[in-house]
Image 1: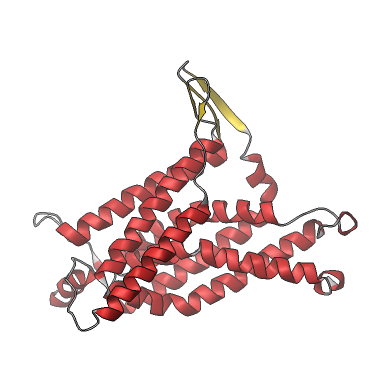
Image 2: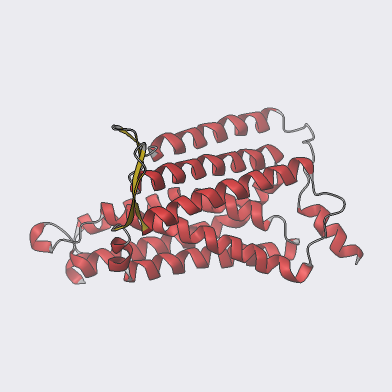
Length: 283
């Protein structure tokens, strides 16, 4: 422990991983903001806290079971249909399924915000709304946690200090500390970010569009991990995350400029949680 604290490389690794966890957690914050925005206002902070605590818990648990996580990279079964070949792994199934869920949820939310609910559709019960929201958050957190942990493991060396690494225990400690620090930072800013997102319709639609992009990225990553191959030499590759996050930040920058230039204009009203709140208040 003393050697780790006195090692400047360990501090650099901790800062790097913390920054990476925050960047990778942006999609989590966007999802939390939009999903929790459908709840009554007094329940939204609780949903965000539960979501972020679940994210931290999943990541820490997966770190302690890192051997099992890495074993998911082993091929479960092969597919050979001539024109299509694959070696499906447990990890690829989780990532691919998470991408499908994110696409479905993002498109459903865009439809709800733009088109609203059908008049004949039953109204959600107030007592079940928070539970349903937490379940959605937990499902997506599980996928994001796998992606985050595998990225962190790829950056931190578990070799012994004599070989230039931090050792197994040292690497696990660095990763746990980075997770705790990043979640604490995200908790501090989750409220203001959620308020800003839910008060600006264009930010909501942009956020949902980003989630669609991330869903596509997860589908590509899951296909790559499963070694999807069409024909003799057409193998599915991954989408570099740098390109994706650059497009997200650039789009947000452009929208911030638009908001600042048109701050006196009244935004359009989307179908959102305010409708639910009014229904609950009248009952």
